[in-house]
Image (tube, rainbow, N blue to C red; front, side):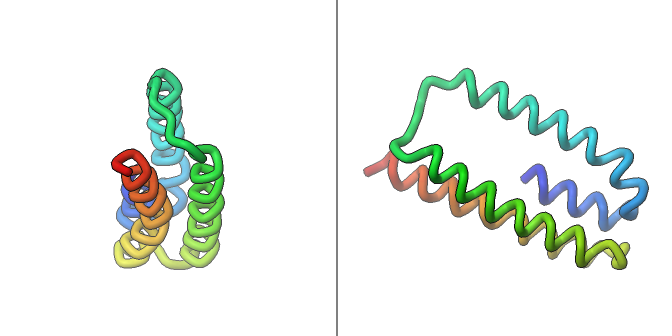
Amino acid sequence: MVTFALCLGFGLIGWKLGVTVLTPACLLIILLLIVWALRQRFLVAGLSRIHMMVMLAWTLAWIATVQLGVGFDSLGWGVLGGMATAVPPLLGALVVLRRTRA
């Protein structure tokens, strides 16, 4: 969700302003989410492997979005990039949900 909003913001306000305004805001949100997650007592079997795979897929999607989207300052590209970067965390969440209900 955070990266979808970040990509959408880049599409709305442009890459140069997006980097200076949205990236620090995104880093703060991610830091707060990490602190919250570390305080939780619940762990799923194989969570580190799931997390590693999600972060690898997300990183590749983010790099592709940024590298291909530098020349496109458009809302459409921001939406597509946001959707591409939202898929890996969604799939990881579904795997964790399935394992917690099994």
